[in-house]
Image (cartoon, rainbow, N blue to C red):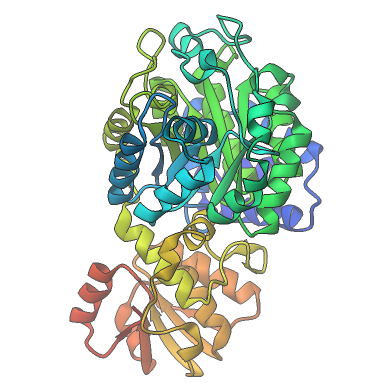
Length: 494
């Protein structure tokens, strides 16, 4: 494993083999603590530059998602219902998932004379993007006293780590939570993904719910086909990292969410942050790695080292200050969304927009929703983003065809990603062209390893067309139509 991971720094095909080995263990529920320790030990001995190269290779298709997106927190206990809805409408227009803080929804509901689930349904009336619910426990939305719901963010602003500088976390108003406990299942059913926190396992029981409660929430989410995201602290960068990742693996978490900032306690904080991201890239089941807490220098390093998702927010949402700022400037009231978007642009990352989100929805429906956690061999069809999108209202988007309409025995395909994989499974022989050399070669390799007769075209679309029937596999309309205008004999699937 060590030689293969080191080779992966400069060789994405080595990264492909590492990922296959890890997925084999995850798929059989055989990834153990010693496997996690081995990966962390290997990464410990790499330079920051090598960690960045390594993380980028593991962010490539099909080792993981190769795009960057945001999860936007629109809510705060300080907002009115109208302000909440307006923030959600803007987030939906931008095309980014909405990260709902359960306690804030419950507070807004109480101030509006409504039940929490009624406010949640009002949000759903206005948006179609995936909705992730956080601060959600065994009775539904968590409830906190005002000193927590209106916290100024002193831990992030001062850079303190072990405990709250004002000694006011973590207190729950359980009696209030229980008033609406009958809503629990409905919240799960209406959500796209559910976020849990495993920091109690890292000896930070004052920072989050008990692991037993989080197990209950994760189990309920899985029962209804929802994705699960797991938050853990970087901590000391070694033992804490191992414990956090293991807890997420044990709970069958789909997306790892790394929290740094004041909870990144190691001496070499930037290397520790990069190491946490890269370890997550290698070990995460669903191919997506996010952060809900990162000072600006950590966020920049994280984006270079393989981050996919940044949780941010509107003013007065606590995620509005947790990513992209620094001690002294990270405080309640910050408009984190615009700061994080600027940083992502400056770091030259490909930011997922609503066109891409819609294309994934169309792709998933073309495949009859047989996407993540569905697999071809050890690799998943799509990643955790795909499942979240198909658990949102975007699932109503339907292409003109489904994979059941593919009747040919021999086809050419322009585009070599997940849609191509599933088409290749249905035919006797397939010829695949992709302008990205690695995408094409990785696809052919995976298909051949699964006894599928797939042949490369080395990026030559005309060779794929010469087979006879040829399909354009992209579901991004502009791209599909651009290819079609060049090759009239091909057929789109949109």
